[in-house]
Amino acid sequence: LLSNAAPLREVPPIRTAPGAAAISSRAHGPRHDMIAHRLLEEDPMATAADYAAIRFGTGLSPRHGAPKDAGEILTRLAAPDEMAARFPVTSMRDRQALGQRFIEARKAAKSGMSADLAQRKTASREMRAVRLSDAMALFSRAIYASDAFRERLVLFWADHFTTVAQGRALRGVVSNYVDGALRPHVAGRFSDLLKAAIFHPVMILYLDQQRS
Image (tube, rainbow, N blue to C red; front, side, top):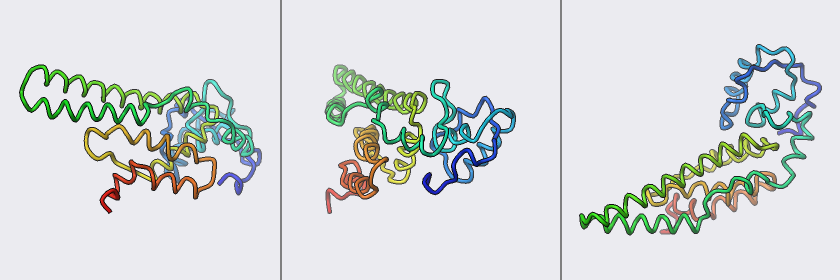
């Protein structure tokens, strides 16, 4: 995508607006271009680098300067994935253990005993806390990343290789699928990303392949 694009310095200056950083990082394609252009109409000092931070990243960052050209975007992408280490999601093993506790608590709660109902409520609260933590990690990575192109690619491929958790006890495992199967390969070979996606346990369950 970027290797075939003209250098950013050759693109005419574009304007930006204070709300540009709020553009959804999941949006892409012509509609996203239209939104960006609409927001790029108030500041005559904006440059093509500002536009690139929006179009190929997650918006203009108050902490990191916009990449000056396509080469810098790719250089940042090739660097270590600092955001995954700084804002981790709950491990698959811990999430599976939590899901199992929820299933057992739900079965026990059918007895109607107050203690069992309390355990189910506790398990439900723990699962909600994990999902909230995952959401915070997602937004924190987008906000603090110096390599926002990575975050855009992660969201793009997560949307492309979509999975849905089967059952409430597995509702949060999609975050582990994205972090474990997709994110490590967004800067590498597509074949590696494809294999990791289709052989991940979450995708296998989503496609019912455990019965095939």
